[in-house]
Length: 110
Length: 114
Image (cartoon, rainbow over all chains, first blue to last red; front, side):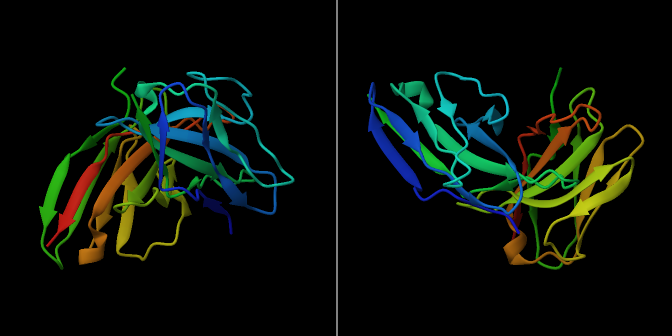
């Protein structure tokens, strides 16, 4: 069975400081990894996915299969980045079950 | 495009009662999944519906059942409610024809069981 671990419940950084939200996964196959974000009073929405290899709102994430990690990074945090971030794993291979971590609340201090 | 819509937004029920939650998928989507999000937790997969059939199910008891209609909308039914069923119930839709189409979520229904 797959599992996603986000070790930090809360991460506070100052505006302009670098951000790294950690995500580790366990799955024996080749999963697809996602980051979802939920801003205050908004719905859960896709931030980025590893197969796209793109930068969204300045965020990037690289899949490290050796370390089974998919950490989310941004070089300079902005106040509008304050939100709840969820890492999620999609096993593929005929399964459509997205497995989420417990989430990390990012708070950017002005 | 209204995106995924869910109703009602909030619901209060008594232990032992039954509840029905509703979801309309995003335009162009044909697959609906339901997730339960307890306080302080990430969403947990309940089941997925495609072509009006349950295609995959997570680790939830039979008290949780669903339905998908020909217009792709869906219902989640929970029987014999327990206090532990109190949670935010999220509906998500996607298109099975588009490979790697990501999930789009609704705002959720907040269920409180007293």
